[in-house]
Amino acid sequence: MREWGRFVRRTPCLLLLIVQLGGVLLYPFMAQNYVGRAAFSVFGILVLALTILALRATPWFSWVSGLVFVPAAVLLLISIFTNNTELFPWSSGFEAVLYLYAGVSMLAYMLKDDEVTTDELFAIPTVFTLLAWAFAYVFVVVQSLDPGAFGPGERGWMELLYLSFTTLSSTGLSDVGPATGHARSVTMLAQVVGIFYIAMVVTRLVSLRSARRTV
Image (cartoon, rainbow, N blue to C red; front, side):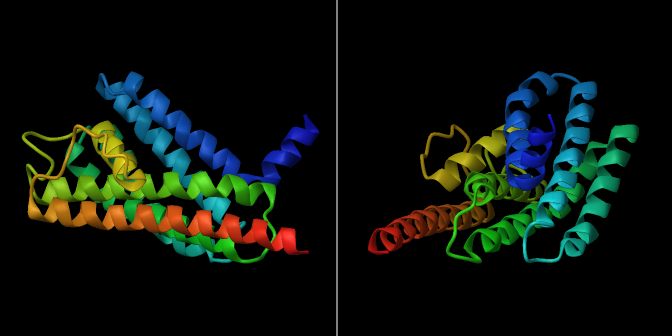
């Protein structure tokens, strides 16, 4: 048990990745009623806290993310106890900034040296999921400011997260798509970020492998 605890402390990116992927699997069970949605909001606060914890392993200052975490967490808690769904786009804006900051911080963590540690390997998919969460929250804000941005009616969180994953991975499998100019602009930015990140990670891994062969 102690060895497992030390492993988790040495790999905060793995812990964050497990929590995020767990959220993808759990949300369909939580989205049927308000209690479920509230529980998922609490789960979101946990993810935010783990993000800040993981940032302590990066060269960037975690107190900056704390400044964004506080208003996001407060707005989420208020929306839970008041059942005020109008606060969700506001908290989403802060959460988008936090996840983008966390993703860039972990990217700097991965690229800071020429040695690939176990935690840096786990950081590769973790950064991708952080970017997916960030753009999903950006989509929430865009939908709030531009009704119908992603088709008729209001798209749910899981639909927008699914759109974010398919856009960043360039798989194009989503049945949800941008329907207005603003939505298309943000979606194109997500596509550029996704392609750039995947290309950069592949290039780094290939270059490190080549460097090892020449040693």
